[in-house]
Image 1: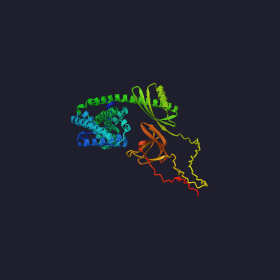
Image 2 (image 1 turned 30 degrees about the vertical axis):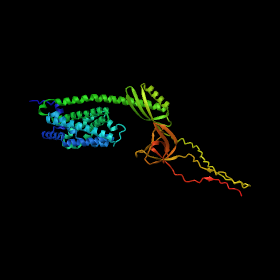
Image 3 (image 1 turned 180 degrees about the vertical axis):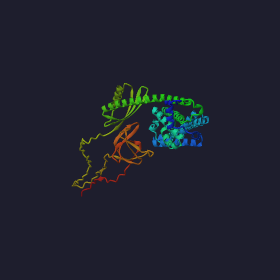
Image 4 (image 1 turned 120 degrees about the vertical axis):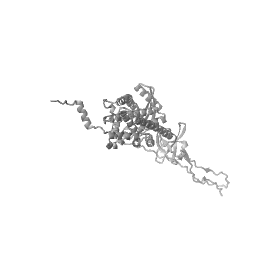
Length: 477
């Protein structure tokens, strides 16, 4: 009796795996390869979608709109060439490898160029005001191992959805997750603004996504049986091993950047704690802080809410105290925001304000009896009223219809903006600051602040005619 040997554990595990994940049929594999070759060819449709998606993504980045960026991800056609590179590397399809590589390179270069042109055009024709780098741009300049993990999962999902026609509806979600077009547009924005740190971080993110997606697609196609017949006897194809090593190498810079950003964030948190404590000693409250590093020196721009005005000595002492606590050179600039502190448990104390009384001189004429008819040649006195100083009325002008900023003090924080043509009351405050003459004004809402004189046109009121009081002597009979 011949005893049939039992299959090994490895063989049983392989059979179980093939029951769960069956090999794709030869005809279906051919269809996938043809479909990827068509989607990866550098034709007019491909470049048109690149241009459209790049315009949408750049606009979304500059306006800091996540919804617009998601729309660009759905239109971008760059996923197909990357997956085509993975399949071509596994199967040895030289034509697909060449067409997918050309499409990816030309599409990426075109996207960067369009982003540069749009950003430079916005600088000369500022449809979008860029006071600082938008948050959506910064979000794509700090890649981490998490981004590699997302690209790995997204590439696997995209390759599996392409191999299984029934799952093609999942491709839009994969395109959103992997985000290939926004990093390319971020590179263009960084180049146009001269921010090479932004461009370099976005370039690393794009390379991470592209390499990881290609490896993930290659692995999924290998699992689904796309390996050519000449590679069947080997455990793992050489191209798959090489792609896995390249993906693993990307973990080195990504991990290094992550450690650097985490340490920097921890240091910034400790610095903010020190700044808040020192400002609290002066009776203020830290609202916002911007910290940059120039060598060993920390350059800080602090926004402080306070109920009193900080003096030069206060800011100098604050800088010395922060430098002593941190044990490193510090240069600070303080922006003050004045605020009134109101407590419902402490009712306000009302102080009576006397109403000023304006004394108007009254001329009383008393007739004097003259006994002798003596002609009188006494000149007739004329009394001219001198107006008491009252606030003037002025109109906002010369702002090119942008309006004038009403500030708490000359050159200080903004209270609001007064549009062209608005009438204000000019009070008695007068100052010279930042090379400008400032007047204290009050608007129709009762806000009192300061505006440069160049934006004020004094309105001259036409006085009503007044009859001077005269005294005429009459000769006695």
